[in-house]
Image (cartoon, rainbow, N blue to C red; front, top):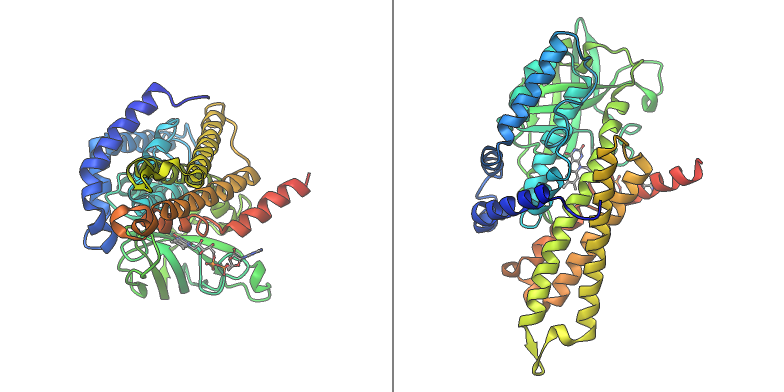
Amino acid sequence: MLEWSDVDIAVRDAVREFVDKEIRPHVDALESGEMEPYPIIRKLFATFGITDMARDSLNKRLAKLRDGTSSSGSASGGGGMFGDGSGGMGFVVVSELCRVSMGIVTGMGVSLGLTVPTIMGRGTLAQQERWLPDLVTYDKIGAWAITEPDSGSDAFGGMKSYVVRDGEDYLLNGQKTFITNGPDADVVVVYAKLDEPGVDKRDRKVLTFVLDRGMEGFVQSKPFRKMGIHSSRTGELFFSNVRLGRDRLLGETEDSSGGDGRDSARSNFSAERIGVAAMSLGVIEECLRLCVDYAKSRTLWGQEIGQFQLIQLKLANMEVARMNVRNILFRVIESAEQGKPIPLPEASAIKWYCSQAATEVAMDAVQLFGGNGYMTEYRVEQLARDAKSLMIYAGSNEVQITHVARGLLSG
Ligand SMILES: Cc1cc2nc3c(=O)[nH]c(=O)nc-3n(C[C@H](O)[C@H](O)[C@H](O)COP(=O)(O)OP(=O)(O)OC[C@H]3O[C@@H](n4cnc5c(N)ncnc54)[C@H](O)[C@@H]3O)c2cc1C
């Protein structure tokens, strides 16, 4: 793949128009929290027919499960942020949105790209029928909770949230942190250790549950104040003796012969990491657009600053980053079209490289704008704050490096 297809370009132009009309004028309100991101996403979905496509795709999937022509345990048939077979279109939508509001994409990505596939991949037919119809259309907001205050990158080994069997039910206790959509989510996928006396705490089975907002003993915090992606709301979750019937345990069985919660979480890792490439592309393209304009309009010593070699170096570096990240995405799209999944070490390398490139480009953009770059009005400071988040979530970049190295050394 050497270029975006004509369809991709048509989608890009239509989304760009939507963004200019429906999002750009509200960026300050979204950033301050005065405006919630969810109605904008629902409007985007309605405008582009995504709601109907998602509903149809899910209905087909559920029909196949009901008549036994497909088995549960696979996220195909409606999985991914925009369903199967979206080719480059899903990436185009993501990168266009990230040019103005990465937070919107973060919240949407966690709900549609993590919560939905986890329930699709692990849930029984009844569980899929119960939670997915409202989630795939974004009528309900999903969250996906692994991280805890004392675990972080050591997500499974250090996990302290646990469930104890109580008759046919489980009682959940513990805490999660940094959870995207945590304050607002209607449906939350929660990973917790099974209390197994005699088994080392690090090695205990990880089970995956689905909780609904408002359950007794389940508290969702207010949003944290944070550095960037302000239009994505991030918070804590607290569980105090939350009673969970077996119908909330994904798969409704503790049998881990098909893998436990660790495998369920890992199955999302590649898609999540690759998604970061599309987000990075949006940041880089927007920085480049803003910087080229500024380099041609800001005049000092009687000439445009674009004539200074150190400014040209910044622009050239941005262009190389744009080409690299875009070419990586082309490879991802082509691999998907050929049915060849990107292996985890490569997905990790992609996430590491692209997030770092986006952050460096955005910081250079701030520098190129001088004092104006430090002012909110010129937008590059928001892009820099937003881009930095990509180096931390979806697995910190240091952890990605360990996965790249492990892939190389295990051969
Ligand atoms: C905006 C935002 C949204 C998030 N959304 C979610 C969400 O929806 N759901 C969820 O479950 N989590 C979410 N997270 C959590 C995120 O996945 C974690 O922050 C991330 O995995 C890092 O964990 P930590 O913050 O505890 O850092 P730590 O694990 O404490 O890491 C501290 C430092 O040590 C480094 N480090 C760790 N291990 C190694 C190693 N082996 N080698 C070298 N260096 C290492 C890290 O890279 C980092 O620099 C979110 C985080 C942010 C910032």
